[in-house]
Image (cartoon, rainbow, N blue to C red; front, side, top):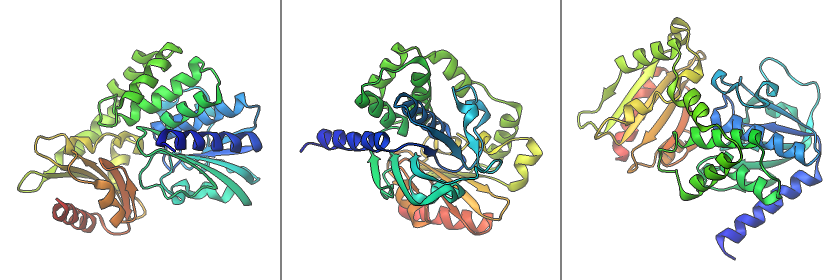
Length: 328
């Protein structure tokens, strides 16, 4: 059996799961990003066409820049409103492991069944049914395949959310994960009615004043190893409050460290209010940052990964930078 046949079988198994159950809970990872929100909505759209009930929920708000997406306003923030019942049928999207679901797992019934749809190579297949495609650029790309497999024509709303997931996880179709499959899907989505200019303008071109202020602070702290192969910057807990920025405003900040000529690994260290430190890694290609992140309990992709450490910011930076240097 070819890899294509195996993937087709997994798509069919996922569709059986969706058709055999009802009353779904759709969840992505904590602090959802563009692919997570887009994939959440794409599953909701598909379930609507299958005549199923569903509730979209995440631990964390929808980033304001993604509020234009259809149905985005219906995604429940678990930190603000907790449903008073549990769900037996669950669809998790863009979660590399079960822990990334966060506190929303409290809504899972004791005998819950979970469909795990994801593209992270470090995904540990935690679902009863697993639709994982490691070479997909985004989970939204897998949802595109699933909808096509179901034989349901895309409308402009579905095309817009899937296109947004592809756009954000490929860095505007610039990253190495921009495959022929991605561009073929994007072409079909444009044909279905996507306004590519408006989406790109919202997500890639515009910047708020708080974003600019947090960028200024981060760049002022940009550091490099003596050989220039490793670069990093950091954000302290008070920086967000003092600049008026939010966690979403840090998206893309790590790339300023990696994009310098000669840098193999760029990192962003974000000090959290609870005393922990979140680390984002980006690789120019030679270093497998997913493997590095896994050493600290994290994961991700070869070129983009992350982890969280329970230690002071200075200590975390010393430990992780030293680990990265030794890995090169």
